[in-house]
Image (tube, rainbow, N blue to C red):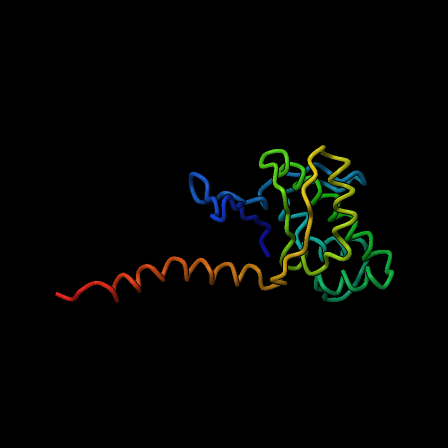
Length: 172
């Protein structure tokens, strides 16, 4: 899963000079207070990073982010520590995004958004410790298929004018 964001202004997505606006997964993060090295958002705060951290902390077996989040909900201290670390790292990235874009709303999607019940409150608290910006945090209504649905919507937006232009053009 990639860590990215979409910036929407007046109902239109902004793309940036090279079409890469929103590649928040590439934002570098400092080391975690427990001494764990930093990295990029993608490396330390996306759903796959939660699994990697859980394994590093001692959880065993093949794991998914959903399993780690479920175990954290059930009170597993290793899973809870993995989620806590991800929250801390993600808060740094959102603080950077907030300082640059001053968003009114930040929506968590994908594997992270599916566990918003565990993430939103501590993420908001961590974000508020890092920055005076106060965006609203929410979970995506699109669930774990947000990226796929976004790609489909983009494809339709690109294809629709092409198809309808051909259908409405007189044939020679």
